[in-house]
Image (cartoon, rainbow over all chains, first blue to last red; front, top):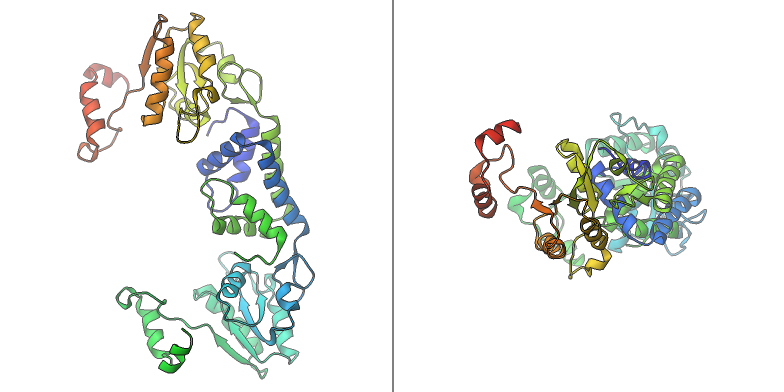
Length: 206
Length: 206
């Protein structure tokens, strides 16, 4: 791309650093900002700068937070003996949205992925293992996505806590509510049969 | 969406103001910035702020430029008597990329669109008409997209300059090079037959 302005080129190039944003999309976004009042660009830039500079991670669960301990960990009505292990803040938001979980979280910050160069030490695994070994935890729920990386991470953590007297579980895999059986993949359908649920239990959760 | 941090929420909301960026995408982009070194967010924010604050529009053609007169208008080897009318800087970049045009541009800054509330006064039509009426122009090439808005804008400008002794043309519509005839829409195929080109001319342009 040949730009008529270095300022434009720089803005487009920086925008195109974001994942999934190509040069053309970046140009479209930047031209949009040029058509809007200058304040919009200021608001956007300041919001990003302030976030990057001041954001904190909860000392207990490592979730993104504005305070040293996040609202969930600080909530005394929640059960601190049940820990749900998730990859990032989006998973916390998704599970909170269901209103079905009243324990606490542990945010790993990613999954073990040799391809992307992410090893256990870059994640918050050590602090999770320490937490479990302290003995106050009754159950650890693994809620990572069921990919090779997710399974590897689950197993890596499991190996380190299995001698501790703690219940471990993973979230149920199965056919999504409302989905047609015929379109489900075999692995998911198979698991949903193996891990079938007593009908009375299923009724209760509706 | 329930956010665990106001700083995060604000950054996501500002990012989601950009066209085509929903809340989920905005969250993904913002979390990416959090994982990168702080400098990346600074570079992005500064590039956007500097661009919005300091960018200029060429006094002659209204294209985005870092100088009062853009490189194209200042280039004395180009023919200032031929003006190609385009919607925005992306069209200038696309046409420049072809290396087939050696005249100058006039960037309208949009198309007349009653639905989006864009009238002729918000575009640089007056300065184009003035330029043409000054008498130094030999040909005006309309290169707007062939939508209702593009055609309306072309016609609005044409009405104002038709009494001037100036040649007007529009870019050729036809089957894209490499495309199969059978998949072309009727209007385009029809136009490509009506405005057929002598075979010798077509050979020359290859």
